[in-house]
Amino acid sequence: ATTEEERISFLPLGPGGEEGSKWDGIVALNGRLYCCPRNAAGVLVVDPEEGPVIWEAAVGRGANKYMGCIADERNGLVYC
Image (cartoon, one colour):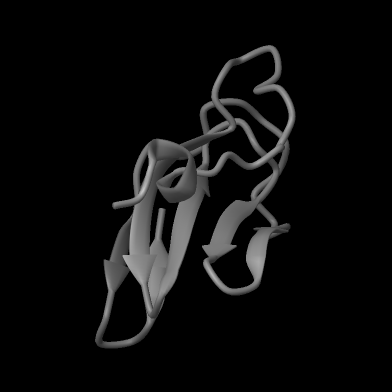
């Protein structure tokens, strides 16, 4: 049996900023997790084998940009 510490890990991504949460909404596609940017400047992509990467898409630095996302497995795209 595994312990909680073996099943859960946290990513050191820094504070959420003045507006709170950086990402809001998560979807799995092709073995990766995609988190849409609410107050962050980019999409958070978590690859279990490679680790987290913040994809700096041209979403800007404004607040409350996106609050959810979906994945289309037919074309391999994530929509925020």
